[in-house]
Image (cartoon, rainbow, N blue to C red; front, top):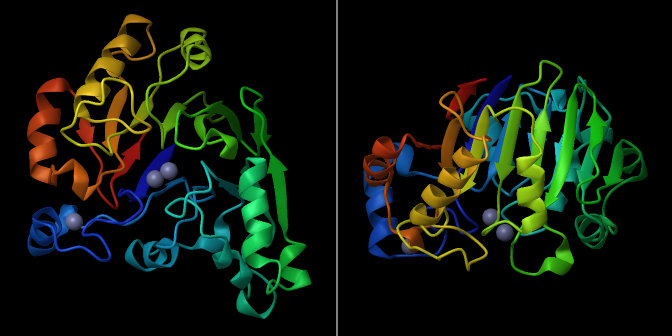
Length: 281
Ligand SMILES: [Zn+2]
Ligand SMILES: [Zn+2]
Ligand SMILES: [Zn+2]
């Protein structure tokens, strides 16, 4: 499995769209891995995770052929993860010679409702007929081609939106936990983690709060939270020496620039995401 981070920032991006804080100014001055766009990842070339407003930028920056995407997995309906209007230009005269004209979309009921509210007045019937929504229920796995996807309840802001974190496995048994956006997980999610028969190949951790310790009480996590969670995962066997543990989803309010994150992460055997980071799993 090839896993690629396309966007690694929280909602406002980093540097943020409308911000002059010293962390944004410094990120903009340094450039490179400090330029972080809104959250998105892609597995191989056909499973896209989230559809932020920076999707088009990701196509350009990473030379993607998004017509190959057959499956779209939505974590939740916050704007940095789902910009439904983009789908109004997928199909009919806007999209010619697509490799995969049909798109299977997996999401919570609330994300589907947001799609309808945002696009109902302008999407054409032909484009709409190519979008196939599958409404997910927590802990109920679905099969998307070669991928088995299990949605788990995130601990994230308005729980009426049913935010999901995901466990994704492929036919070879490669196992990825994509834990965005979420604070500390519920006992039911820990039970799911404990029930795994093998360690994970990749765990992507929410690190929005940067240097802050939320003591497991936030709807995001900081670096000290992630270290504790990773250690708990080691104790139950979900993390072992081969597991890639990656910090991701950063905010200027977390204060840590890429080199500062790397200085903290390295001694803890954690990696730091950046836009374009690829992992072969
Ligand atoms: Zn987010
Ligand atoms: Zn800022
Ligand atoms: Zn969110």
